[in-house]
Image 1 (cartoon, helix red, strand yellow):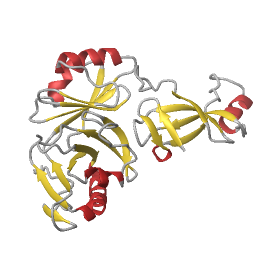
Image 2: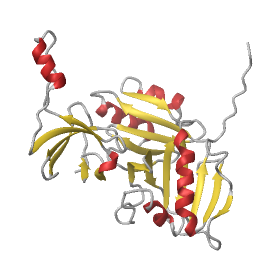
Image 3: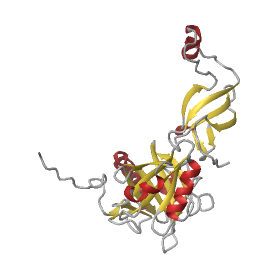
Length: 208
Length: 91
């Protein structure tokens, strides 16, 4: 039998070139791809929404979001992705499939999306200007505060968007989960949209 | 045109896909052929208020039942379609 060696590579490995892009000077937009995360979709089975909510509460110690919001626990983020369903974003296997499966047995269906999505973090003084070209969501601080989330489309591609905690310099942080095979297309669109503001491109091997 | 998704809030038309009339009901098994033919092929061409199925595929992926005036595009009601689930709606 042939031995295969599977390398885990980012779908953006070719497209992402770390460093400055577009207009010179201080970058108005920071684009950071975050790699090596665990992502599990939890979907309540028919008629089992209440049991799923109880199971989530038992596992995470907080209620899973039931409206478009992102909830942070000590070591995971729960992001609403649709009616009676949410994503669990974490790292290091603490809330991966193996850890979640026993608690949700019988109430929800879980599916591992860790390698099916790309996570892009967008911040900077011009982040909203750039995102306004891609998204029809109102991202004003009052309309889309920290913890707000949306299942929406950018450039005809379904994404999960949420606002994380602000950077230490006070700038808002927008996180986007996009299907792996659409990531390169959306990435190029983000570069085109942000070029006039100057972009600082980076990637992180670790979920903050 | 915008649709206020009961789960997501107000969204642009591009996030939605139109299926059609929400009124036809699937005949029971063994129903006469003309009833099945009617269900599968025949549609009213309503000038006025009608109930329609829409899919929020660019968002929460829920099926919605939208009451829309085909003459004015005015939408008077958006509800989760039967079986779309969710105990909680935004508005």
